[in-house]
Length: 257
Picture 1 (cartoon, rainbow, N blue to C red):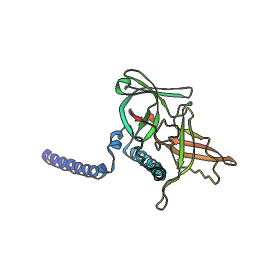
Picture 2 (cartoon, helix red, strand yellow; picture 1 turned 90 degrees about the vertical axis):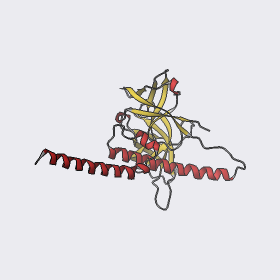
Picture 3 (tube, rainbow, N blue to C red; picture 1 turned 180 degrees about the vertical axis):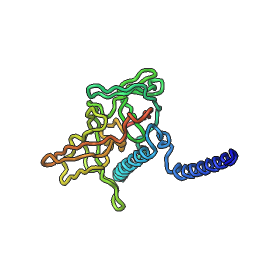
Picture 4 (cartoon, one colour; picture 1 turned 30 degrees about the vertical axis):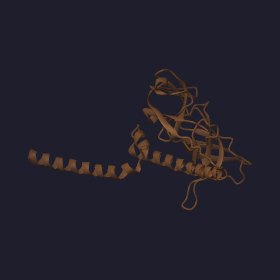
């Protein structure tokens, strides 16, 4: 076959592939928020990123629905209520420049700091999945305590899976605790609610009870839940986001009420 013929065939294939990719982008693009697009492509395959984003979306929307219904009930009894719900603002995106995991302690260092508006206690995220909290800052650097650190604790809530006829609801609240292992958290002090049933794949989100974090950030999903007796549970949770799979992370500002 002549070189010119190969050139024509190659050009046609390239144009066809380009058209197909463009069509897919045109279909998928509008479905993703700018926030999601900002965090896509951080070390995950497209399929893994899509699953992670969908999990976060379901958990966040479910918890947001609960919060809105609660606020609506509260506002109904308050005349002149004018408070705006707390907002979340991206302060900076920081590149991971070092990682530390020794004796169960897990930290990251990012290349953003005080001059970028970063302060201690700010949540650090990938998408809407919590990765950790800012533990310290320098002018151009910050130290992040990763959620899987053995000393990490944050208020959490387990949500039911939403259905067509029933929105997500809070099944129980407790404390998410890091275990010093990359792929596991535990839910401690779960409410001893009568009739509580915890099963794998239920989403776990921030409860926002202590005012440090916004409500509804995705923490993970239940891997295994064992009833220990009475209403006590032993619950193992898989983190939604693994910082080992990311090169950079978002630092958020949250003003609690």
